[in-house]
Image 1: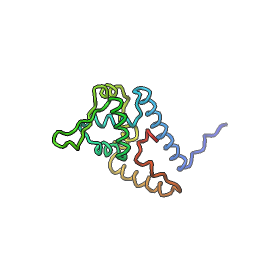
Image 2: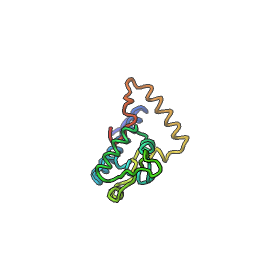
Image 3: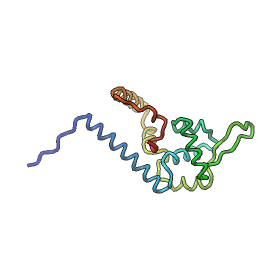
Image 4: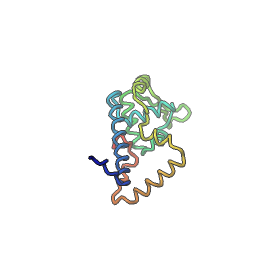
Amino acid sequence: MSHPPPVASLDMEVLRQFRIIFRSVRKHFQAVESRVGLRGSLLWALSAIAEKPGISLTQLAGAMSVHQSTASNLLARLIELELVRKERNTRDNRIAGLFITDTGRSRLAQAPGPLRGLLPDALQKLPANTLAELHGDLQLLLEQMETLETKGEGIPLADL
């Protein structure tokens, strides 16, 4: 007579949940790249620009929660691919607004959702109190880790 597998300890169950999250995120990014030919971070930047025509580079970095230099690199690639164009503000030439091109709009239409990525989309759907609890709990987890790589905190998941 076979016995059911032992119930995993809670720490191993949480580890299993992290694995599912990471694998799901990776699989989504692979589907995006396969279908649209763009990395997930480029798609997210493109969608942010489409959602807010005329957005500035600083606003784009904020919308994606990435360092401004990361947003600048993403923007340079999107412009090179002719998916986005930069236009100077007529009132203040120092300010440039970002706009999606017809080619960019076409690529965006081909993309599987969510355009921001699975994890940002899921986090945004959580109730505020749940998100606050998760934030606190993850902070405690980070404090338990012996080595932290904080340089990656401003890099999109698709690029890690």
